[in-house]
Length: 295
Image (cartoon, rainbow, N blue to C red; front, side, top):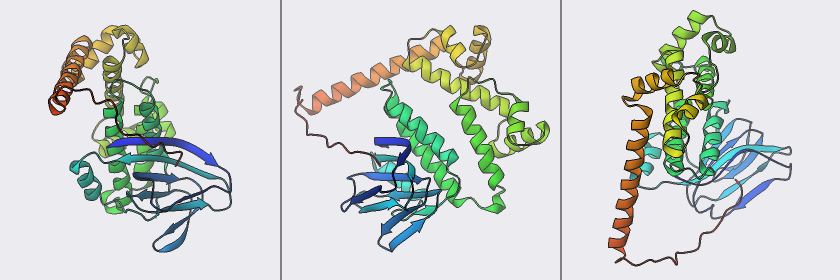
């Protein structure tokens, strides 16, 4: 999935209105945090805060504020291949019609991460954004189709928000006491519920989150192993190296070397393939790109 543009926690005046008779030229995902009005093939539909809307490419886009401030998260994107298109179909997310979801807090975390990655210009920002978009839609589908008999009600949603916070800030000094307090649960009840829902203990999930963040920093920055250990919440380099190796099977330096070598090889193959396809010429006069503004 390729992100074209993305925005998080945008606020607009009461006269905010979007009118795109031919759509925006791509797909558009909206998370609307305030009352709004959509005009679809079904007519005019008033919606409550906590509504999502997935516009497919080419669908007319008409929506506006319901008389007050209009707040939303959004991202324009394009499926890159048939696998991406099949994923959207298989997740069974309604297209081109607003859906009341309720709490958007968990999904907003993903959009916030997309914003950070999309505008970071990091070595792996494109790949990271692709993964975040797919995770976003998997989570959205899960929330839309969650049923009470699966044991995943409001408590699951609240617990998922706690888990998202861990992954969003793995360097924080997370403790069972603090996490349980946030859920208004006892230590034992919180640990039991967390593992039942996610298949991993809370503190092992903290380790997984820190390892994931460390892997990203090792691949995309020149920071030393010691500095990355600190950025991921470790006070001891030795402890960091031990836990990283336990999770990944590699020392941090080995991981960095392998990932960077792979990235260089992939880029070399892309250049070679491009030169073969274009006879070695440099066709730099590509087509113009039309910029879009806002949601």
